[in-house]
Length: 120
Image (cartoon, rainbow, N blue to C red; front, top):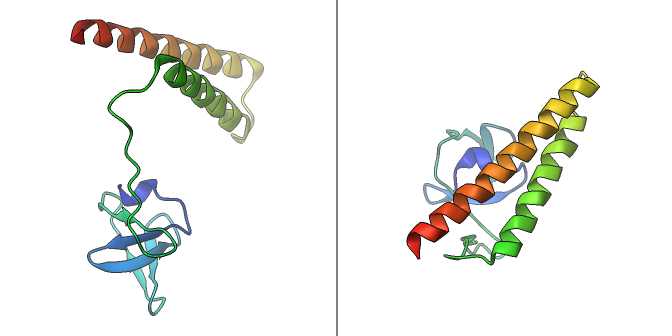
């Protein structure tokens, strides 16, 4: 996983050392708390509490209903995040954003269906 995708506080291994992410570009060494700049694009391994690498891979296929439900949840998360934008979006801007997200959701599902048909 790329470093910039980690949440602050996440334990990870980079170049053989164990760190915790403390900010967008900084990590603290687990052994001595020495801070280090980590490139956003750095490939890191997420670790669990016992120091084992967490593998978070998607399966080769997902049931359509599960994917669609997850996409709906993602769209709702986008709208919820938009509510926290400051200064607040106007009603018109929120409507436009909601329309754009709904369109992207529909187009994504259509593209996936098309790809599925082409592989059968």
